[in-house]
Length: 183
Image (tube, rainbow, N blue to C red; front, side, top):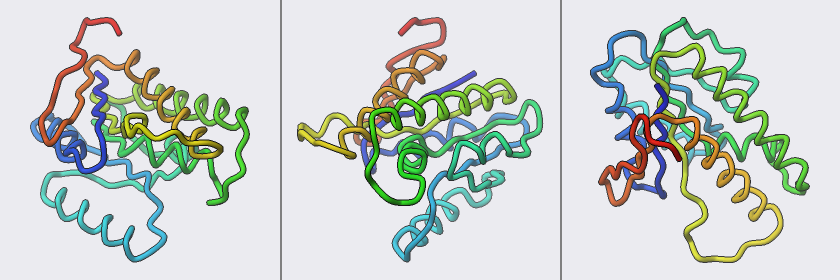
C-alpha cells in the first residue's frame, strides 16, 4: 500500500505521515533525505527526531536514491520516505551546485521513481511525503524552474502509483485519491 502525503511548507504533512504508521504492526523505518549541513538544518533534524521519539521509528539517512537501494530494509517493513522535494534537490544538484540541463531533470526523475518502486515492492506500507512546489504564482527560470518541473512530474507519477493521496492544507488532511480510484 502506498500513500502520498503532499502539501506546502509547514502544512502538517510530516506529522500526518508519521501518524499513518502509528498503529501499523511491524518495523517502522523513517528514511530521512535531508543533508544537515548547517546549524539551521541540524536544528530541524533534532526537532523532527524529538517529535518521532518513542513512536518506534528506526531512522536511516538516505539523501540519495542510491542510499535507498542500498538500504537494509527487512521484507514487509513499513517505510516513511521524507521527502521527495529534498531527494529531488539532492539528485538534481548532487554537489550542491547549480547549472543543470533538461536531461538532468529526466535522469533524476527516472532515478527517483525507480527507487520508490523498489521501496514499494519490499515494504508493507510506504508513506511518501512530498512538497507542493508549483502553487506560488511566481514565474521562475533556469535551475529553479527545472527543480519545480522535476518535483511536479515526480508527484504526478507518485499520484498514479499511490493507493491513497492526501493533500495537507493548514493542518487538515484532504483526501484527493482513495484506494481503487484512478488518477
